[in-house]
Image (cartoon, rainbow, N blue to C red; front, side, top):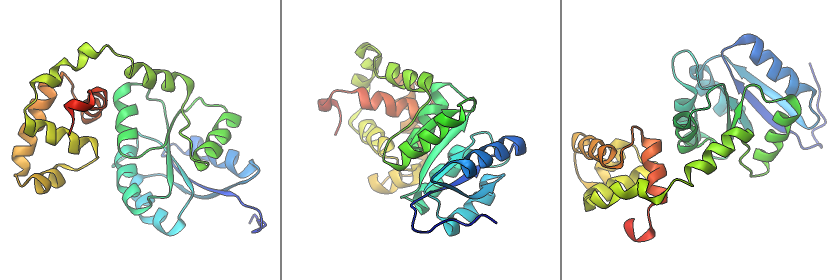
Length: 222
């Protein structure tokens, strides 16, 4: 058993990764890193949901493609329980849907699995200090998404006042049930509004809709 000097501030890190060799490599990197503690390793999101509330890590490294519950859904649930814990996605997925879905549910960073050890440890320090570390090509995609011509958001002009209300609540991270309760309508009606919003904005996911909402002029939002 490793003993740590409690007078030295160290970053407590947990890992959620189903691939055993990958998980062992990450754990070894963290244990060898000065100023870090690997407090737990989980092979599934379900295991993490049980263990993390007791372990209370500072930072959690999360794979997206897990057996059973996905890493993104795990982050969404855990942020409600551990709001001060920072979650960093470590994955092979580079598409914007996965990136924005992860950020929308509360992930503070997004790294690719080929990230070298030194960069990964640096990212852990960065996110613990309040930053949002991302692999360079991931950060580039995020920046590019906010450089799209405003013409792409023209569909916003076709949104009804109620659809704008629903979209704003989506942007705040409300669940469908919470939107229904806030607006005094049924969940089925919310689903219909969201389908229409997707059609008018020419998007296919919540993350894309929220991204377009962020591009809208202030006068177009509530």
